Image 1 (tube, helix red, strand yellow):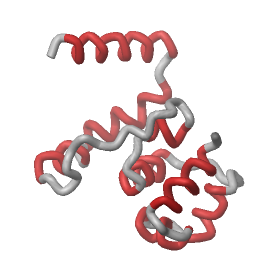
Image 2: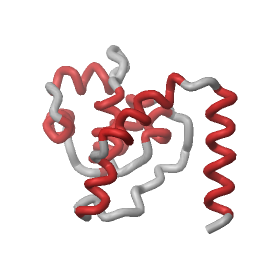
Image 3: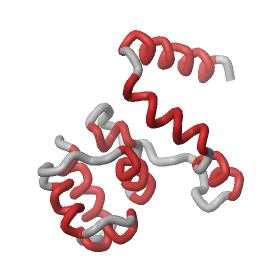
Amino acid sequence: MSIGKRIIVLREKKGWNQRDLANRIGINASVMNRIESENRPIKDDELLKLSNVLECSSDYLLGKSNIQTLMPYDKNDEEFQAFANSPDLQKWYKELPKSKEEDLRLLREMWETIKRNK
């Protein structure tokens, strides 16, 4: 399923129209329409905002995963907000897609090791 279709399905599950979703992420409704119809690529900051308001992972929206992983944290929690709005985290997130495939594979392996050792 394409990113546009995934956005539409999630938006409709929440009972929102395009204008509602556009307002929630701070873009014009016509831009939202072009994103959903895939006539305009989605920007990194828009992807982050969409995954937050639609309560799914950015990997799900991008079609890299079929699991709509919901965020396991209370988005209103002060500690979570401090983490999510960290300039270091945002910089890392923007640089991640520019990484070599081998580096991404190693990062995934490290993450899996960390999860196993908890």
